[in-house]
Picture (cartoon, rainbow, N blue to C red):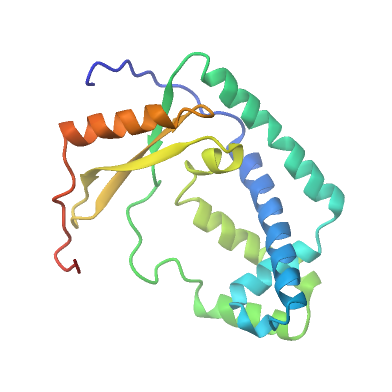
Length: 208
């Protein structure tokens, strides 16, 4: 333990509600960004199908839903603040699953075809009712549920490679700190790398 005291604690806040609020804000932000770029003369066809679908859902959001999702971020922020009255750092896995193979996260062909048809004919109502994009987003969040807390609360966090899986790929652990305590993360990263160096790890095929 390198002298550190470690305790198991329950997760901070409602993870599923946090994910839903994150997606609501995410869809809205994508819609806003697409609108801005199109106002600069960039055609919609310049964006990937998935991005256009996210924007289509975002344009259908009510302003009240967007504002409510943003307001609910206050709960995990306050809970995290309470956590740091007891602990200096929190520790989680970086990912919930092993590293993905190239192309593994891509949507299946039938889903891409469905999205293209919906976008071509402007069937935004069908897209919202189908829940297709939300399901794709949740599927991706299932791989990285632990990093969202720092992303949404604006607190510093770091991932360090701590082991290798059976395929020789790095498995990371994440440490999160309170607002403005990046110094703790740098100190811990130094301590961990000195104790268990990882700079020499190389995949079977790599460019350097």
